[in-house]
View (cartoon, rainbow, N blue to C red):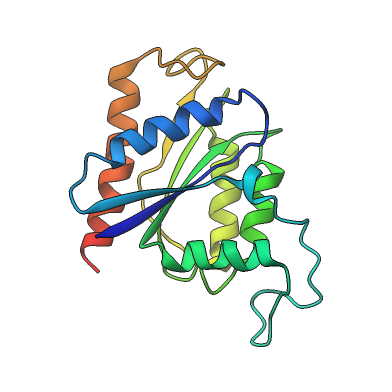
Amino acid sequence: MKTITIITGSARPHSVNHAVVELVKDKLQKYQDTAVAIADLEQLALPFYNAPMPPSADDFATDDVRVREWSKCIEASDGVVFVAPEYNHGLSGIQKNAIDWLYKEWRNKPAAFVGYGWYQAAHSYAQFKELNSVIKLDLGETMTGLQFTKDIDPSGAVLDGASVDAKVDATLAELVEKINSL
């Protein structure tokens, strides 16, 4: 059984993130031999990155139990899906902080990006791709960008089911295929 972890991207109450995470979870559960886990960054409550050494250092270690739990979660995953809002043309602070706490756990890990916002998450995806030039996830070519008032509304309700299904299904199919080929 392969485990795919969905990484949340917002701590806001009633965030659209919750609806998009559920949509991605429902679609992933349709794949045989796939278990879905959710890494809820709000519940994990990682501290702001404050380690004396970067996670890329050979001697990086942390005493923070939340960071160790986060590390184990990603290490145990066969692949990850970032469900990312776009805040001020970038990733949310909570998601960026979670990315910054890890390094070796990301290396060559199959990953997908499902973003949403007024600009189809194009800016947060660009920032994510720039981060990936360092952390080296095995990021697929197909990303999902859901646009408010076209694909989903600001409450997270799906407005154009065919468009949302086509985008999300393509992104997740690429991820699952990549995981299954390993």
